[in-house]
Image: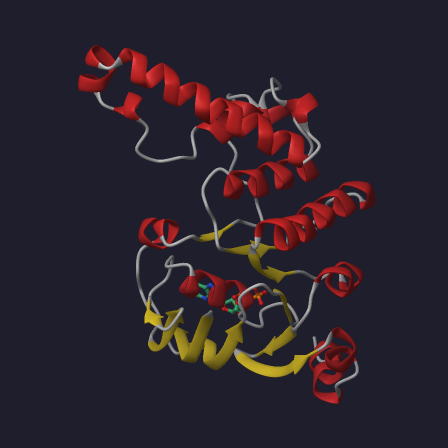
Length: 250
Ligand code: ADP
């Protein structure tokens, strides 16, 4: 579904991504691993339209999506979450979810004045959807809490929830496990697996926690120095001499 072909991203003379080619298959939970500074986040940013590549192509279902801005990719169902969650702290958890869907009728003054009934219907529909998402993620009890007051792990769940407010096809998750306690990490892992199995989401996951990768991921791709070093099952990649060497070298 996503095909990255000979991708390069330079910062000045420095090659953060240096000719990476890889595929993320529809329906997979693909793990992206590699030592710090390997170029994983930069690769994510280029695929997700946050950084233009220096050269190379990104395709989605055979169509060229190289360099498309994030909002266009959003409409194609390609989303990314961030290592640092981007919640709006002064709003409640439910409100954070409700503001995700675009083109809500209430957003223009015209509609606010003349189509009140329609707005109320739409708001009810979005609110119901938000409540369904919270239930799916087992955090209904947090619906009315200010997002600033929930834990780091709960914020990660909220980020995942935001992808469920729109019809995401493929979600790029950047270190969902960082700084999250084991219990919440399991909840996040369960949610990812269920979204994959029950709702057909494809995931690409950057993660350092190898237990988490082993539990979730089908194919695993190891990146080092901006290049794909190895790919295969978790066991294959973990035992690959080049991968071991790359990790030991850091
Ligand atoms: P990873 O996610 O694998 O830890 P990154 O993609 O964050 O790696 O970074 C790869 C390399 O590119 C690092 O050496 C980093 O310092 C460098 N880098 C990342 N972003 C920039 C930038 N905006 N300007 C200059 N160098 C950058």
